[in-house]
Image (cartoon, rainbow, N blue to C red; front, side, top):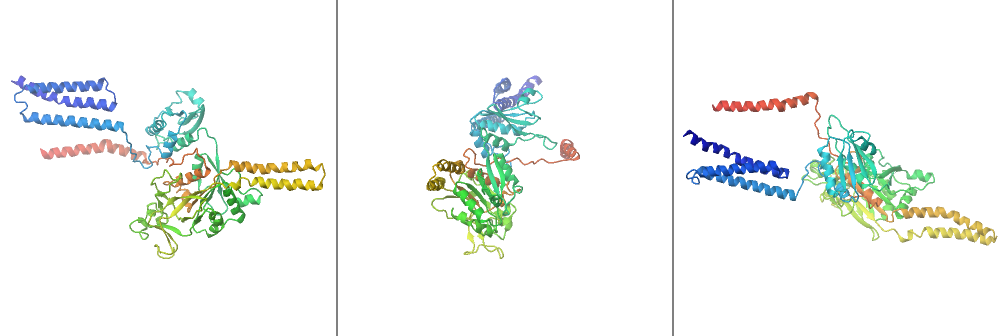
Length: 584
């Protein structure tokens, strides 16, 4: 009797292995993606046990009438349905992959600029990482580049101690060097530094993207920053200067009055873009005339206005009037939020810590400078409205638009609030881009000037009638020709399309504010558009990840280890023991 009753009990226990082995086999095959010996063996043993237990149970009388059989069948059907549903969901997810990056700076996703650069790669490029750590973050970044480039970009992690010849060929000098190789050329990107607080150094996406964007293009555009009128110095906007240098732009200071006093052209002929970063004093008339002529002849200017600068406004007004743009002297206030201006912390400016005087912009015009911004954030402390009234010859586009609850305040002494007739109701324009075709008369100006100069010189000798003076007269115009032809060559090389960007704020490019949100991208894209470099990508640049690691001393680290491995498990076992003792 004991042996006969023991067999059903034995099969009952063995039958539980069937579902587990079957699920293990299915999971191993789905996760690995390959149905090798291990997944098939587990699946086979599981099915055999299930079938065997079913046959043994079928020999019992009234098998299907038993409640255990019915509940077991229901559980089996439910299990199979869940497994099939999970398999279908997993298959659909693999075919239509979707990744959501919830990190602050999108660490595990490429920036829009990186995506465009990777997709535009038209030549094989290889990234050599001379480091054997194989950081998962770096692997994810390089895999994304490889996928988006269609295989044009490949990568390889190398231990320089195992391949010293390769390291010497690529000019590697230290462990952690990252080298870009293309068309038989090499370019060093960075050296992955290691420290006790940074065990896995991160590959700079911004450096890699900028290096890929410059492939085969050694041209350097020169950006001159006006100085001498209380503008931001290059040290005060060093973050903006560094960003331009990464994009292959050279930044130099320019004092117009100083060059004019030395008898030099106010604006150097190699200038691609002129930046005026927040002047606070007026310009001399010769400086204004130089800027006006530079724009007329096809130059590009980025004007960043400061608040409360009446002298600057009056001196530069004649230049901007020709473009149909002016700067309103009133201060832009942002009253969005439940409390309006009285609730400073509730305004959108309060979000960034500057109060209502720092309007937060999430609306952008349809223009190459802001085309990729979507509804991203940028903010502009102490801004002034830009008023557009462009003539037909000028194409003007509003770039930065405030919300409907904003206004330009005229009286800051009394209680803040919109006063009809005195203030300017939003939405307001904080920045605009303007362009126009170069006047047809600008090209022949040099030719008529050269001809009259040569004609009087030739007629004067003819009136004197010495026959030998004819050869001397010819060299004179000939000697005057090089000065005339040199500017013509410069004009030809200069952009044929005058361009102007005016922003009623200069604080957004200052150090500490430049790298926040989209502020830096607004400035960088504006400079690139003004330089008319069609090969440059106008998009959102990569952001370096913020270090969120917790810095702990050795004592603190040991305490955390003791707490997680000893104290917490003991606490759990102790609670279980107390519950067991109470239930006895």
